[in-house]
Image (cartoon, rainbow over all chains, first blue to last red; front, side, top):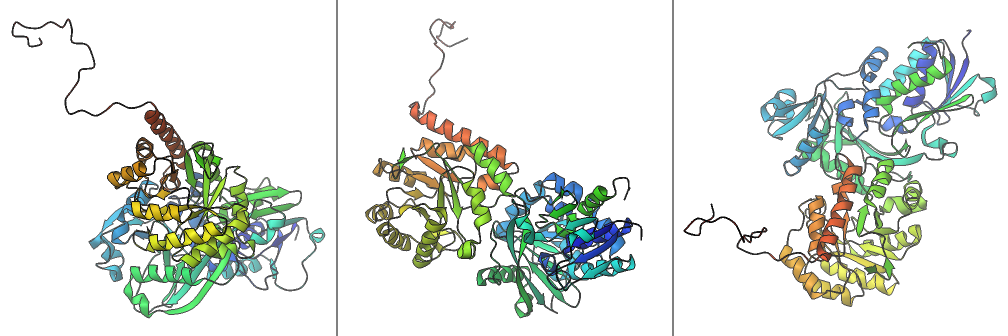
Length: 323
Length: 261
């Protein structure tokens, strides 16, 4: 191997995406995660939505622009990307939120009740109006991270989940993707607590993520395989790492139940809390400090923005390469 | 106008929730020239200083902080949250919310009076979020509040000043009590109207945070507050039923019958 030796710290979505991108450029990549396994941080609890237009409702234009190629990247690296779009609905009393959401973004069509039913038969009669973002997709974050690990190994990379932290001096570059753990090095990084549930419900079938608007607690429900649904996620300005609160659990369950009453019979498989790393403008950033490159502040855009940011990392290490 | 002896640099109080990022929040606070920023203290954020990063961003704004007890549904919860807020922010000011009804987020005025008394006895300077009810106002003042924060409309509804009659009566009944219109203001014109009615300040959050351009909206509210206040101080004209020409009629050509031609 003639490429540079690179240590990637952190095996979340930022780290794994960077590792694969660097290995594709010919680097000898070692990923180490002291959390003991792949995705021991926030990525494991992500929604995995590749939804630049839904995010554009609240995200700055830079995030939208940098995420336009994301879906293509994931499709070329992970086998089970689902391209079924996203659906945005609101309970009857919150329909003004739907108009506001639509005004802030683009690339959607407005559906009536009949059109909603033809897309999602199980939502028949539940909503009069919805926004449909046909060009969006989603992945199962856990499967996607494991797929990236396999890809990295095919590119002669390795992952290390045990032992003492590897010595930076044994490598040409260090790419630090450790999320909130890097706050000592990145002074303006903060934690944004998020809480999520995994439910199993065989009585409801959804084909795409459904976002349910609410003035205070917008919630999304993402279908996974085997009748599993991810319900997320709260946004609390806090570094609190305690387990999920009762309040958050109730809010998330209420949203699921409002989407479809059959969720009342669902099994709660997981109830988790984690910290999203975020900078003050909530935009993920690459920051170089000598031979150490930080990719952090992924906020709620980890899966959406990691491909573009990983490419930025690669362009520092391989200035001439077109990716 | 002084609130518990403190002169504020502006009559616009700005809430810090729901912005798309702390960076946008900071820009909005500057554009609004806010005299006070309010911060809600989620209970899970208070343990072990867990909200420290966000709170230090708030403190760095250099604007006096008015912590609130948003989302508290009982006296005890509100009192505990107030005590945490005092520790975190080092201020004895507290915007007291005791919510009694989930759909309208309407104040539980009985709990509010009780919590006001407890907190005042504990040395707090209480800013109670209340309705326009005169009797409740009296009880709050007796319980030790020296400022009132009547709602314009339910929190986050953006409906403006719902009960002009009630608000005017409250203002007229307590001309010397500092009063802030809290909640329900959706547009800059609502803020102007609050000052025209004689209120001393307005508190705005959602209308700025959820605007398409929060920083521009913050500026719009600053201008609207200035306009409403200046318009009031300028002693506005009285309303009349009939038109009064604003240009002199003397010397206009008239027909033989006296009609204007």
